[in-house]
Length: 427
Image (cartoon, rainbow, N blue to C red; front, side):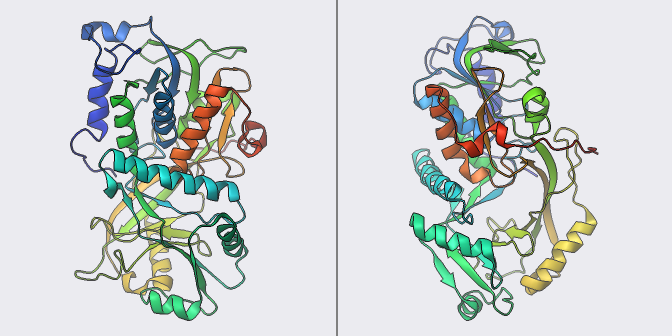
């Protein structure tokens, strides 16, 4: 699912920093004097301002913002930032502004795009965002697309409305059904997801965030303030405040608060090979696209990876630690049937790659960005529900502010707004 990365970016960089990061003073950046490595696993006298558990897109950005505010931060993850098992893993993610009537997400995505681009410029990695444009294809009378148009106009997002004839003219490689139309966001596009999160984590570590490559044991039930968390290796991590951004593991790490309120589902992503010399399915001819009438979305052929096709409907329950990640033949056939309808030139294209990941869903698709109901100094970040990745920078900014001020979250992001889902069997 993942490919190697070079230089400081990538899991290897996190591993190296995790070994070194445990050896430096948390009161200053990583230029502190090292203590003998043999003592690293037994250090227990340090207390951080904030311990962030989970280095996916929510956790990495939260740690980044907290450190930027001058706090002493540790970032803990058992597999490393944006691992193959994480919801932030994988090669690419869509960033778009159209969210139906949900202005809160349109504004959050707009803020995130600014933060992504500014960050990539800061670290010299502008290639991690591809401004392909995003095309939201809709049928006549599609209510969500129509509501999106109203929201984009209200917020001031640059966009175009492409009616049937213009859509077919601009993108002849796409079959446009009678009455079909689309919203086009020319300034949106795709994020190179895995590498983007690794870059955020690496930059946070370079600024003084202390990485710990450990699995956290669920804290014991209680009330008041949480003083520490224990790792599977017996290490105590002490902090004044904690942020649990564990993605699909939230329900198992915080079962009393999140059990049944975060449920991972298995999702499949396919990459179909584009014919040699055919430029119709790569930028700039082909944008990032969504077709929610058929529950599919995808990205153009980036870095010769293939034409990405992903099915958005929730799959079966998933265990991110043990789930086999081979594609399901029947679902590949289903994806080809979709290609036949929308992108017929690729109907017989070879499957050149696949990823099996997971969504970490809440009952209503809204994020969980709230204080723990029992521990006043513990915050929770999760419930990306398949659309969270793009929002990582703004989520981190928002949560870092809540953690510092201790004030209330938006009602849509509260735990109380999330229903418990009856437990389903996980295979």
